[in-house]
Image (cartoon, rainbow, N blue to C red; front, side, top):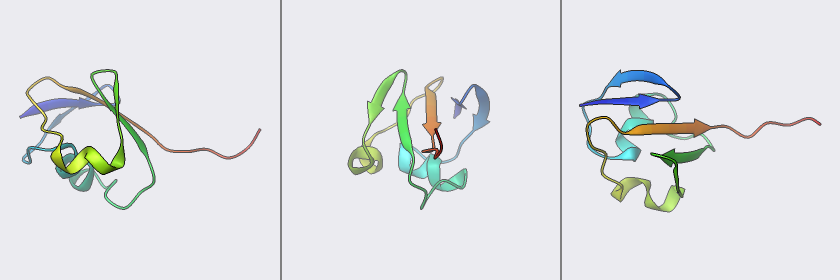
Length: 65
């Protein structure tokens, strides 16, 4: 299935947001996620099914000021 992560096309094998994050190296990272502009909390990622063409944003916290 083809989706976009932070604007880049990705061909994924899994079916959920958690599957995608694991495959892309974000599995254990503290990140914020959104699918098609809607926030998805970490507790719901394993059950959040993705579909062809979904747009996923993955944001890591930054320090500084």
